[in-house]
Length: 403
Picture (cartoon, rainbow, N blue to C red):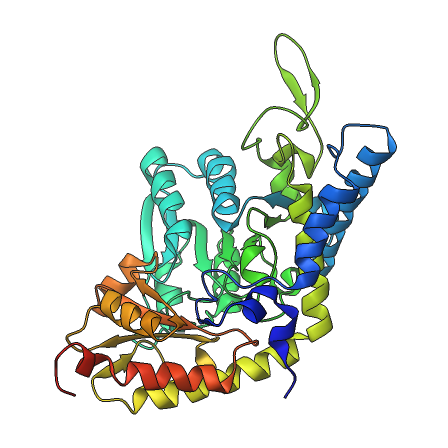
């Protein structure tokens, strides 16, 4: 078995068992060097200067955009907007598209499984426009039925917001069916791909996505760099989200003429070093291969679920099928608060996440207030999964329940 950890300095240096990959992934050496290399060798403001350093910085930044376009198979580089993260990308769509196109009497449909980042912006749009917010409910295993899709998405629907993969259940949503139903009624679809981009290939053209957002830091890239994909026709018709430097073509005392795509949506000094790191992360993913990563993560997920399900008083949320979890295993232990579960695992050197996972409506829908989440990346090992299982098996006894 290859030593996948050797590419990740923190995992080599620290003895921790890192199972919080759905929150952020670790960074390989090549990504760290790419970001550092920008500042050491090319540091200048991109897009503004005509001297060599600035033009080098511009080339690095725009080449990263091209890399992202190819990574998700967008039709044009103009459809790739750099942001800080998924949250900013979705807010951009909410403020720029949502407030401009949604009116009183319209309906916005949001999956109940959404991270708050793909829910709160649409609550805001509904409040400000008088539109009605409706929810796509899921079953206990995370599945969304065709009947539900057909019932909730109607001729009144103007926008549907849905995560590609749930950050709590790991379930892959039926995006193709949701998009087709929405498009049949002329609605647009906003896809949160934060949890899918690190684990599977995405083809926005085949998907016919209208908008799609993801973050660099969850897919081995730096924090502070994110992506919004949008169809060029939609982006062209949208007003800028932020105004200021670089997003203009000309300014007078009375107003301004805005720059063409994609720069219309990238006001101010851009995160060129982060873009360089994101490009390196994409190269790294393509070198490893999604096929290798998916096979490895599926095997580790199956091992973890089998072991955890065998422990009395442990309940795993979502599907019983490990292949429907995308490396995410969220569980509760009877009578033990998830924060205590996390603390006990941490004492054994295991890093997991505990709480509501920024998905409180979903947990309420499932009848759970909070839960513990272990999330797997291909660089995790069988030994680490065994340690998770062994530690979880001791939690109730260590909390004084005698078993």
